[in-house]
Length: 360
Ligand SMILES: [Zn+2]
Image 1 (cartoon, rainbow, N blue to C red):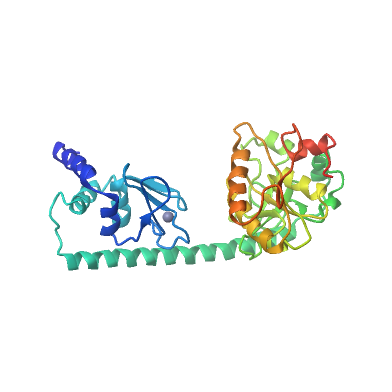
Image 2: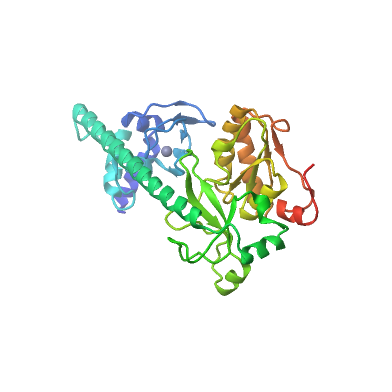
C-alpha cells in the first residue's frame, strides 16, 4: 500500500459510519443487540436470516453475523457487499468506501448507483438460491446413501459386542436395534469402515430420514491406524443430526434424553430403556440440537434430561450451558422440564454406568 493509500484508508476509517454503510447498501437496521450496536436480519452474505443475527458496533466500527459466523471491519463489509476480495481488490474497496464516507466525490450519479445496488442484491439473491438448491441436492444424496448403508449393517458382531461389554453394555439387545456394527464388506463402505465398530444412525433435523452414520473406532483398529478421529461419519454423508433416535419420535409421556458422543448415547439407550435418546455428535452441534429438541419437547409436553459430558477443556459444559439457554428460550423451565442429570464426580455417563450408577 502506498503512503497516499494509507492516508486515505485512515481518513475513510475515521469518517465512515456504520449507519452510512448500511444505508449505502439499502440494509434495514435498528438499534439493538449490545451497547452501541445496530442489528439487522440481513448480513453481507445472506439476506434471509430469520432473526437479526447481524450486528454492527457503531463505536468500534466492527460487525459480526452470529448465524454465518463472519465478522470484519468497515472495509471487509464493503468488500463482501461488492463481491470483492478485501486484500486483492483493496484499491477498489478503498475507493468505494471513500465515496460512502464522503471523503471523495461520488463517481456515479445517484440513479446509476441505485441501479448498481439493486443488481448487486439480485446477484446475491441468485447465489443464495443456487446454494440452497445445491444443499437440497446434497442432502437428498446423503440421505439415500446413509439410509442404504445403515440398512446393510449387522445387528450383532462379536468384536463390537466385546468392546461394548468392556463399556458396561452387557447385551446389545438392550439398545433396541439402535446400535449396529460396521462392516468392511458393506456396499458403500469408506476408508473408516472396520468390522464390528459400533455404529449409530444420524437422523436429519428436518425429519427427512437417516442422513449419516457415525462409528466408534475400536481400540485395536486405532492401534493399527492411529488417525486422531474417534467417531468418523460416513464419507459423503452428514456428520451432524441426532444420533440413535429421530426428532419425530419425541412424544407425550416419554422422557427425552440428550447425550453427547457415541458411547454416552449408547449407554443412555441402556440406562433409559423407555426414553427417546438423542445424541449429539460432538460439542459443536450440541447447542443447536438442544434447541431443536426443546421445541419438540415443548410441543409434546414431556421432559428433557441432559446428560453432561465433562472434558479437560470444559467444552462439553460450555456447549450444554449454551443449549440450556436456548431450551429456556424455547419455553422449558430449568429443573422442571429440562433437567440436568447428576452422576456425582464421574466425568460422563458411561464412567458412572460402569461404576454402578443407575438413574432412579
Ligand atoms: Zn449472516
